[in-house]
Amino acid sequence: MRTYLKALVDVMSSGEEKTDRTGTGTKSIFGYQMRFDLTKGFPAVTTKRLAWKSVVGELLWFLEGSTDERRLAEITYGKDRSVLTDKRTIWTDNADNQGKELGYCNSLVRKELGPVYGHQWRSFGKIGEYFPGIHESVDQIKWLINEIKTNPDSRRLILSAWNPNQINKMALPPCHTLAQFYVSNGKLSCQMYQRSADLFLGVPFNIASYALLTHIIAKITDLEVQDFVLTVGDAHIYNTHYDAVNEQLQRTPQELPTLNIVKDFSSLEEALDLVVSDFQLDNYNPLSAIKAEMAI
Image 1 (tube, one colour):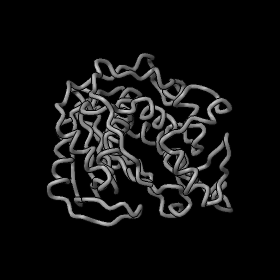
Image 2: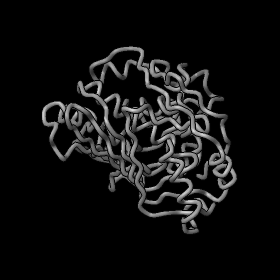
Image 3: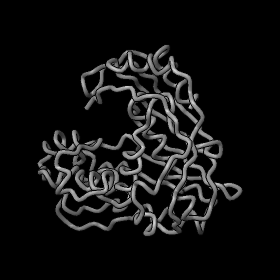
């Protein structure tokens, strides 16, 4: 993960001071790219602890197509939502603030976020409850898997979360907007474009999430994994994170872990039967967590 640490150094040393939507203030670089070789280990940050269960839970939630934050809690904690009313997820603040402002259901057992990632991945273009009328939708995940299997050399292996018609209905417009997949010599790579990247809190999570997605899609399509490439638009560090970043940069990176999916699967449906504990990081020995507040 030295590639990620270099990004922190570059933004801290060369970033421009900018204002932002949250009113916090950042240092920012426009246009930044990182590449991770998935054959050399799973790219989980080791200079602080990665919230691995949250990474897996959110990705399974996206793949399921849900937009209910309380369903995310069920997947992450492995319990019925009725006993999770005091448990939070990384989407709770967005549901309780932006989702509530948009008029969506916000109760102890359901917190709707609007047509965010899961909706776009599994029902792109569907109007549903967010707009009146009927519209044909596209299950992008099923389409992507089929295309990789039948047309692996295609340059159109795209997964998009950015739907201009529905941006103003989302509690949080997608930060990771588009992913492109690439097959060569029996190996699958993924490049994700992220319009806005919180380098300290968000990016380690995003790297792990799309690396895991690449592993899942590769397994379903009977391929090996190769690279994950992260291309960022606005790569920024919030000024409230400067001390935490400096602390992290003083630490020595540890050996990368290995992804271990303990139950076999060969289809999307079988993958969605898995639970968070089925995805393990072997030999993951990170340094202690470094806390920082998320800017919303």
